[in-house]
Every structure is written in C-alpha cells, then in structure tokens.
Length: 231
View (cartoon, rainbow, N blue to C red):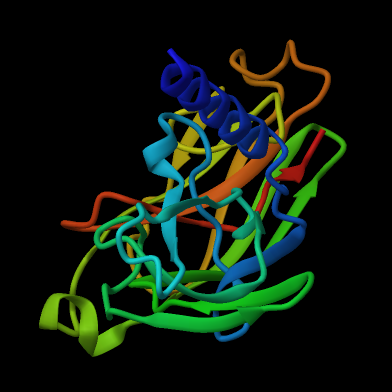
C-alpha cells in the first residue's frame, strides 16, 4: 500500500510539472521568397494545401516535424523554444522546383528568416485599375523562374493563367466568386479585364482580386502575394 501511495504521488507531481512546463516564447516570422520577393500561395481548402514547410530541431530526431502553415502572402510564423533549427519545404507542396533546400538558423529570441524557392513561373508588376463603368483591368508580367530546371525541360508549358475575384480578402482557386481565364498562355506582358457589374459580382459591396498561374504537371499554383481590394 505504501508503494502504491508513493507511486501515485510521483505521477501527480509529474503531472503538475507537465502542466507548469514553460511555453515557447520566441516568435519566428518569415517569408517564402524568390529573388527577395514574397511568393503567393493558396490558403483555403485543407490545411495540407498551405502546410508547405516543416521545422526540425537537430538533436530531437525522434520527434515529429513542426508543420509550418503559410499565409496567402507568403508569410509564416511559429512560437519556438531557444535552440538550433532546420526548415525545409515539403516535396511537391509548392509551385516550385524541389531542390532540397535546407535553411539552418539559431533562435535566441524573436527571429526572422526568408526561405528561398525557385518557382516554375512568376507573376510580377501587377496593376489593378477600375474605371467609372466598373471595368476592372489587371496588367501584369509572366516570366520563367526555374527556366531549364522545369522538369528538366526549358520549354515546360504554362497550364493556366487566371484572375480570381472574391468578396473576402481570401482568394484562390477554391474560394472565389468569379474566375477569368487568360487566353494568352505565354511569358511577357499581359492584361485581363472583367466588369465588376457582372451578375456574379454586382451584389457584393466589397471585392478582392488576385492572379494565379499554373504549370502543367504541377498541382499547386503560384499566386500574387495577397489579394487587392478592387471595390
């Protein structure tokens, strides 16, 4: 009986120690970037759609990786303990070449890191304008990112270029009110136009827009970083 009481006391003390365990206090913030610019991603659907990075703490190899969920503007954050960490991109999780990039960094306080990737294609120089008649014009540029690294072929084809519009700031190929496809699936300067008075859009007092590009054989699309209010 005495041994049982002693064992119970040990379990209770261990439980108290666990409950009083210090929470991580160091904020990690970061961005997924290409040439120093943030890479836009999908953020709705299942969590796996935007759990594209994983954190590891060397010395704790037996523990599961820490999933990192990335916002649609390419930013991410996590609360960590002090220590040394490694961050990697999950294979096949993003619209970029799986190059096995590993980023090592130390956390001694609040820390900021940029995780570099090489997308298959990139969108840039996007400009949104709306005229007095409610016609939205979006101009932008398409360029190769990976170039010769695209599945080993420099001429891998663009599968889609589209403008998505939604009545919340979260916009992607799952969450949208209207989609407008570009007929020009090539690199260079492009323009897409759409009337905000169309039946699918007219009833909403607030609208946000966002561009996306898809590569053949690659599931995730690349988006412009975040959405832009157009109404």
